[in-house]
Structure formats: C-alpha cells, structure tokens
Length: 396
Image 1 (tube, rainbow, N blue to C red):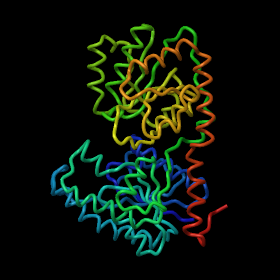
Image 2 (image 1 turned 90 degrees about the vertical axis):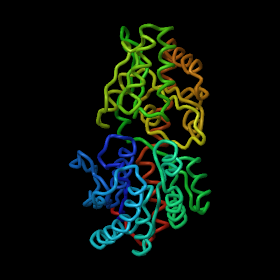
Image 3 (image 1 turned 120 degrees about the vertical axis):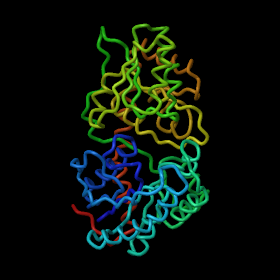
Image 4 (image 1 turned 120 degrees about the horizontal axis):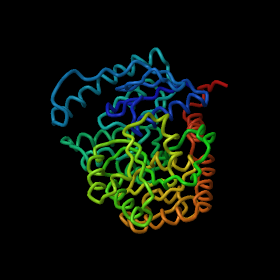
C-alpha cells in the first residue's frame, strides 16, 4: 500500500531531536518495514535528512513567505492562508506518488490533508497527539482561537479514522467533532530493536543513579524531579541524578539543585541524538517521569516506553493512561502527582533491593516489547488500512 504521511507542523521537523520528531520517524519507518511504500511530506525535514529510516522523504512543503513576526495574530492568519498552498502541493505530489491512503499528523492550522484526500478519493487517517488548541492556550500564544477550533472540528469530523494517543485525547476529539465510532486509541511505542539491548545492571562500587530523559519543559515535572532527587540524596548521599536532554526548564532545574546543594551530584548531557539514548539509559538504575497534576492528562509518553524497554524500573505519577502501562509494584511504581515524598520512598526501596529493581524492570521490559513496539502499531494500522482501502496491495 502506498501511504502519504503528511506532517504539516513546522514545529516538528522529521529529523529533529524532540519526541514528536522521533514519533514521526518511528511510525513512518515501522510502516515501511511492514511492507508499505511510505512517502513523508513535511513542512520541515530537519538537520539530518540523510537518515531516511526506510521511508521516502518527499520534497518538503513550501514554507510561507516572510511575513509577520511569530506569535502575532497576523502570523496565524498567514499560516491559515498558506494552508491553501499546502493543498496544491499535496495534490501535485499525489499525482506522482499515487497514494492509496493519506496518514496525517494533526497540525494546528492544517485542513489541507483531509481536503486533499477527499479530492483524491482516498481514505484519510488523522493521528492526534494532543489537544493542540488547549495546549497552545496553556503553554504558548493563540490569538485566533475560534479559527483553530474550526480547523479541529473540520478535520476531526471529516477523517475516516482518528487515532488518539490516549483516552483523554480521544475524549477531546469526540467532544470536538469526531464521530465516536471512528476514534481509536493508538498509544506511542518503542523500537522493537531495543529488545537486543542488554538491560542495566548496577555495578558494585558505582553511584546509584536516578535518571530522566526527555525535553525539560514545565509539563514534565521538572520542579518535582529536583525535589525527589534532593530527598533521595539526603537519605543516600552517594546517589546521583543523570538528566538526558535539554529544554527551557534546564536553567531553573540547575538553580534549584544549586540552592539545595545538590548540583554537584547531577550530570546534564544536553540534547543528544535519539540513537544515543539507549546507551545513556544503560547508566541509570531507576527512571523518573514525575508529571505534575494536569487536567486533563493527555500524554502517551515516549520516555515511559523507552525506559521500560531498556529494562529500567520506573517511578511515575498516577494519572491519565499511565496506570494502563505501569502496574504498581509489578512493572513500575506509581505515586500521586506532586507527592515527592512517596516518589523518593519508591526510589529508595529500589536502591535497597536490587533484586526487586531487576524483577520490576524485566517484567516491564517483557510487556512493552510484546505490546508496545512501533512494529506492533504498524501491524495494527495495516489491519485497519486494509479495511479502508481493501483494493490496495501490500508488498510481501
């Protein structure tokens, strides 16, 4: 089957470092390995476009001409108007690529994907990773709220199937125009090749290491990460914190650790290529995802599945879909959002009982490599795609 994978979000370059970019590459690559011919059409390719991942990288969507400053009302109007240019580009590409199906990553101002699929007479599938209108209002700037909401209602209502990464995203989609019968839960995953990576084993004489991997942003609980580590350090002074990644909250995190005299026990790698992540995870003994209380909690964290695939015991906050993937005491440990004392106790229990840490990490690893690989997601999508485009072929 020929799949046109559309990513019109300029903030998600195909070969970027953040999790959304990893998601695009991973899903497109898994679909290609599943036997589909996948052409990725994106607003931006990123800095390492020579790494293709098995899919065809099509010429990027033309960026809008220089216009109003980013974040202004006029810039949003500029983006909305340029979506019509995207539509013409998609149709032109489709004449050469001849897709059987359009798979689109939902972007704030993009109507072009679903409109192009209708003109082409092929099914459209929409992947929704977040309630973008609400997210923009909370964390960024959004002036034309009604226009962005209209785009969401249009694409949610017109797509053949909407793939939501979490139940909260699914609820949002159903409340904003998606037909309930067309909504499927489609969580994130991890590369099945991680199964070949040896799980970590704490070496005697080395420092017990708490780890965090990902972008340092407010919704990742960076303040609580510092507070948990300080509590653990008070009880176990030979511990250290390893932070893999970068982001706008790094300075605040370092200042907080400095204030609590814990900065010297913390290591910051800065941004790393995704291919390097397994090697960094192998240096950790326990991995943290201390999300603050968020209403609604709509994430399907890549970091959680990657921690677990690496064989790490995880300590995460109990909210949203996370209890679906972490059975408390069996495949990880859950604590209430903001309860740093409980989180620290979980970490210290794992430090005191290496056998428990191994058992929990191995159970999580086995489950995630069985249920939550990108290969599994591609197989699920293939079964779905065959119902949408039954006459399209899949290469053997």
